[in-house]
View 1 (spheres, protein in one colour):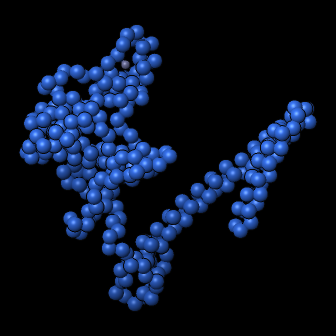
View 2 (spheres, protein in one colour):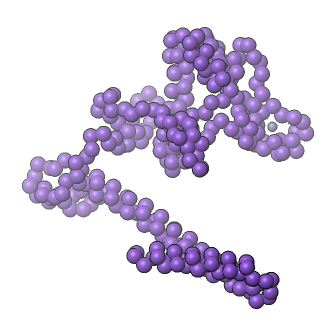
View 3 (spheres, helix red, strand yellow):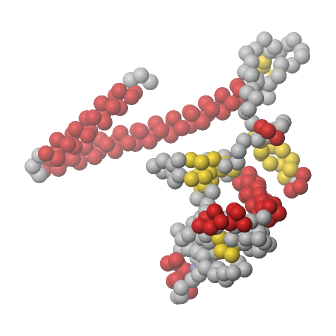
Length: 272
Ligand SMILES: [Zn+2]
């Protein structure tokens, strides 16, 4: 463990120095051969590193599972009997064992039967409504991730999209409101031989704001007019918007749960 990182650092210093020195030399067969040798050395190191990363990932995953088993066992309330008992994972435990206090704020997801949809869903439960954390979070972004508002559904981080919302009463434009079945514009054109109004991969989608969703302001949610629309949309309509939106979001959460999509995937949803 202690030797691994310094050795790796020395190796990297060595290979970068070898390349820098080669670049300063005249173009000769000998330098060419040195270059080939360096490539081969790098490739050997890379193969080992890849294997090591795989082993590290597996070990960490396995260690996390192991820790959560210990945590589950040690955080269960003590049984009244003063003798050895079996834990959920088949280990023997006893009254005088170590005990981890389960943190109050920690919400552990468990399978819960949702009567309305007759579905057993892995979902966090709370004892009091005040324990429910906020639904949306602002993230300032990094090299890989766009800044914006995010939420977490089934451990998938999803950015809140702000597509253009068309007022379906005033505007009959439906361009790019649905994904094209041919996926890419190239494939679509080769099948249809004409310009297509559906959204193709990578193209920004638009949302149709129907009157049934928000009668006082069908375009409610449109980013450019949000400031005015917030003032002119009535509270009854907000209830209806929430009915549509929450039902949509929860249905996707059931879908994520059913297909066990939990890999903390980052999702952008505004492009086809
Ligand atoms: Zn198309």
